[in-house]
Amino acid sequence: MLMDAINLSIQTVIRQLFNIEQAVHLSRPDSDFGDFATNVAMQLAKPLGKNPREIAEQLAESLRQTGDYTDVSVAGPGFINLKLSSKKLADNLQSTWSDKYGENNDGAGKTVVVEYPSPNMAKPYSVGHLRPGNQGWAVKRLMEATGWKVITDNHLGDYGAPFGIWVVGFLKFSNDEKLATDGVYELGRVYIETKKALKDEEATGGSELANEVQQWLLKLESGDQQAVSYSQRFNEISLAHIHEVMNRLKISTDFELGEAFFAPQGKQIVQDLLGRGIAIQNDDGSVIVPLDEFGIKVPLLVQKSNGAALYATTDLATMMYRQDNWHPDRIILAVGAEQQFYFTQLFALAKKLGIQTEMVHLWFGVIDQLNDDGTREKMSSRKGVVLMEELLNQAEQKAREVVKDRDVSGDDIKKIALGAIKFSDFIADRRTNILFSWDSIFALSGFSGPYVQYAAVRVNKILHDNEIAQTDISQYDWTPEKLVILKLLEYPDVVRLAARDLEPHKIATYLYELARDLNRYYETTPIAVGDVTDIQKQARLGLLQKVSLIFSHGLDLLGIEVPSSM
Ligand code: ARG
Image (cartoon, rainbow, N blue to C red; front, side):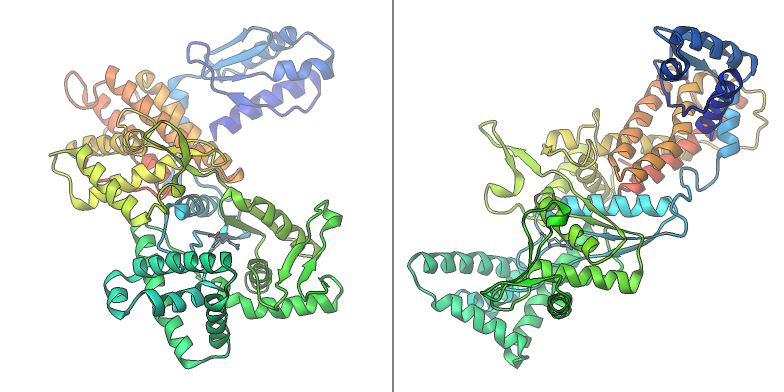
């Protein structure tokens, strides 16, 4: 890669001049100054005990003598600016190009488990599980692109009280007919209504409903036929819905091992931990694991006083299962920021049990919305939940408005809608909250999915409308393309960093900048119409082919497709 080669040449010169090893960081300065810049002279000032400007001048002189650069200059307190010839850059792109351009083997031989979107079965799929799906999927793709073996798992929230609440609520507030027509939405309604009834009951000191809920749970555990048949029926409806939404979001997983699958094993492991003295039983029967040695004051509760399994009980079994069956080097869980403390505890527990695997909580901020009065709040909190299906329907409606009466297929509308929604998840570091606004996620002139998709569609159209021929372009002068070529040369590093830091937004930023650089390029340079020679035309089309592939590749890393027209 070019950046590596430049790095190496600077390091070599440093070694020759000063007999010292120094890591070099390259940046891209304003193009008037150079193509690349480094502040390494400033870093060397201390160890060498010299003036940085002086060091920079010495390095610059040696770098000039390599003949690799068209210009080497020193600026400010000691920045070194480097310029390369367009031809050299073009040659470099050509020689490093392959159909796997951008990918690498950093993770070769290693296995990673990525867990997403892990929705809960009791309610319809809400926007609360949009980010886990988007971020989880993008990270899965980044791991694949960097050579890891990837196993994906949808850790369904399918255990515990919801079942009892469903049955009690179904018998009280619903019927077969309603369930048949409204499916999961009826289950969701029943769930919310019953929860409310339970709360009211508790407030008045009653316990009749709560007991019924417990009884159904016990019946289910003991294999009671009626309970099992209710459970199957409700679960089927909910799972079909989850799959439908995931299909629309174009995400999937290899496995779907939910909490219910792990609960029985979890309880056994708790017994085992008690036996080994790792866990402690309280007087009321509940079980905890102290985590003081990790500086965590709050112990992890792994069993309820009545012996029932908890979230943590199922996660304990989940960790064991993954170790035994998949032997991963790393586990990544895409779950919102609210669960940060819980995962700190869980990962400490893993260490306590001797699990060496690197555990990563891939957390992210919430999605905020602007209220009519200008205040900002978490999107799912206003009127109950914002339903994923509704959000997708609205997005398709907006996408239709954006392309207006242009001839765009239904399939492409869906791609644009999804592109807008998903890209908005990546416009900033995942840890920041995002402010959801229909206008900005569809902004054709802003930092949005449709903006990048449009740039890709435009390139593809040029390629489609023009014939690519075998022409000798060795004499072509790449000056007009220089910035675009530099941008394409950056891509492998961007992928490497995005994967290393688990920060897919770096891909989104890159794609936006590529689209912007490309639009500037078109303003000054005709591709195939007007005053262009055959050599110019073929050289430019050849470069656009590479641009097109990078758009598709980068968007695909984010789970976004390029429409055929828009
Ligand atoms: N279902 C959970 C939720 O929506 C997320 C599950 C996260 N994964 C885990 N292994 N605990 O909050």
